Length: 221
Image (cartoon, rainbow, N blue to C red; front, side, top):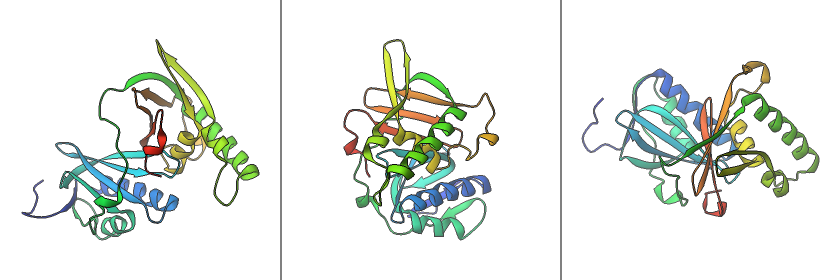
């Protein structure tokens, strides 16, 4: 895969990657119609897409392809149009540069320690119960902060102990990183919890979410 000279944009490896990124972008738009997608080079032929979910949690998905420059931000609406413009591999126009619209930091690519694995069905059950509580006690502004901040799972490994807040559970399901029904989840499917000094990371079947530890206000809302 080569870049045309002096071009800015995204080049995807194939149909699967285009569909994958389109689903990610669509989910981001459902959460925020003004969402910004950040695209960064992950490896020689992989790109990682980032979005702020609105839960003070970042979501990411890796697709095959290349991006130029190696770190760019685009409006999710414009990126969705570019993805819909043509099938399969090749160039995607991400629209106007939106780099100044991304103000938060990103987690590091390495340094995470595997803490524990949680059954995916447990996560879906927690999401269902959380949604019921949100309907009962939420407002026009969304679920109550007390519910979002509640740590619904505690995991540990050695001297590392972390709590998983409901924010992360909601972000996982809102972005479609877990199947929407427990019937579509095998009994042995897991969600992997990792951590490092500043970040909590949760890896599910279709993507990962990250929550800043300590002061999550620095993460883009």
